Length: 161
Image 1 (tube, rainbow, N blue to C red):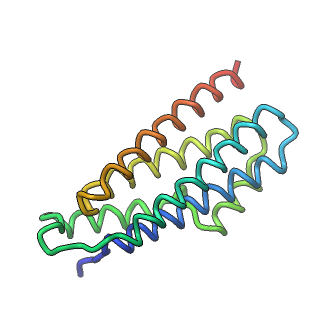
Image 2: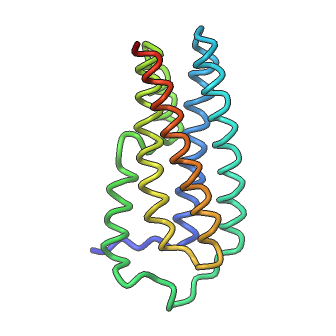
């Protein structure tokens, strides 16, 4: 049985993902005694908050015409389901659980890195599923997610030395 997501539902999934990421980052930032990690995760929580607003704004403007639905929609929908079922595609419960389980700076950063990578993959897929009018906003967020991956990777390298 095919899984059908509308562009509006995809935007809602994105909003919920960003909210989960924000909660994860805020929780770790509050719990850590590492000032560098606190600063990084506070920054990333703020970034997630900006992304929430972008996706909410996009959701308000989406009107999908029949010709804007991807030809391979069923395949894309199955892929999105696989991504959203991932342990890193955060909801509030998963975000708090992962944050509480992070026992070290490097573990917290590795969890954040996995989350950002999963989010990046989701947004890359979502880019093709929203009306052309909204693609530049999603593409901007893709660039920002890539920057988060680079920032976290660099931070992880410094804390593992």
